[in-house]
Length: 264
Image (cartoon, rainbow, N blue to C red; front, side, top):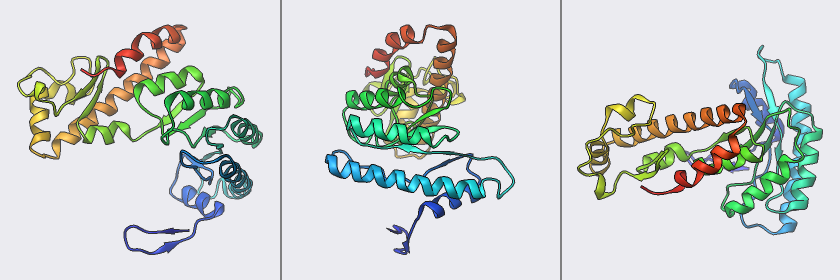
């Protein structure tokens, strides 16, 4: 049960209504109805939540199979692994999710405040179980370094608000490190935003100009920073794919990760 933050109206979601809503808006990938546990949470709660997610998944699968082609186009549904930071729960959930035999599989309940080493550990545990011939989607992750580390563990797909959320706050991701464009050091830097960037904004605007926009509270500043970050993330994934094809991903990843995390 949810209460709208807009008008205070009350809404009740079920596995069936969640699937129907996603089908009706034309989602290419529909996510099964699950409960994402907070961090930290105790073992008993995590276990009960996982069992509820598995119970809901059966209802989601049943409803999706009945209505898959209702609107005349092909859609896929991904179930979601839960289990918080507890290895045995993650193993149990990964086996349950894999057994549903959907087009792909998602890993949820991570990047919710737990340390990165725990996130990597749980991701590795789950990826060892989920079938490698189907896409593995890690939900809500993450920084450029997080993404590369999780690709190394077997993840194929990601979603994250960081490129735009951090962009709106003046944080720019680059191959040389992280820029806080609000810093005084960029006040008189009239060089282009990012010499290695591939979107028009990187060549069109200077660091000094972008800083001026942020300091002046001009909305164009967050827009430019968001465009830059989205372009960087797209290129990051493109380069990761190329390195995998060339058979040198691990070597390349280890070389660039530290720089990606450094602050300029």
